[in-house]
Length: 128
Picture 1: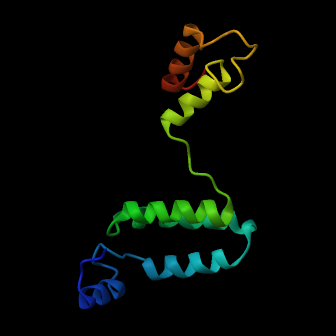
Picture 2: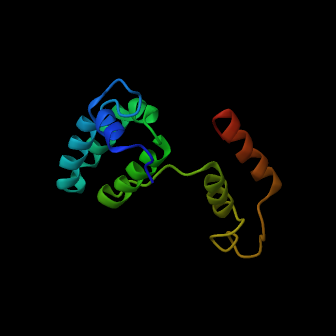
């Protein structure tokens, strides 16, 4: 819940230099127009978020703005957010026999320790 007074909000809404709302009006106007279109405008949405990203990061409660833009991307444009490191590890373990595909051949039961070590090195060093 916003705690600023109506006068403070009005001033912030119109003031680009207060550090709380740099280019908010332009961003929101463009965002609404893009959302009015169809899923084919996903690249334009991605461009908009990327180009306003630095300014959005300086806005008041920027983590909330990021969560909303992520949700808008998912709902309107079917853009999935990037996976977390833990999610990537779970997916790799599933692909290599730690679950997911029945252990890749049935009786494997878990990930080969050498495969796990290679996967960790690949993630740290940049290639398998």
